[in-house]
Image (cartoon, rainbow, N blue to C red; front, side):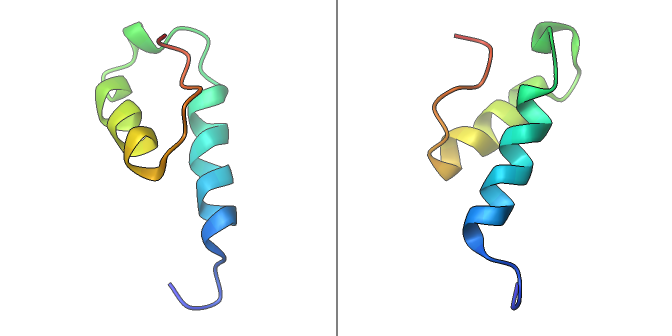
Length: 47
């Protein structure tokens, strides 16, 4: 993880989630929501 800022990782995961229009149709939406929750990202698109 050296050389990669934590905020950059959060942003990348956030963008990955944010790009999906309907996460309920995505097989990994639960996993990605859990990852976002773990990183403290509140806006996930499933709310």
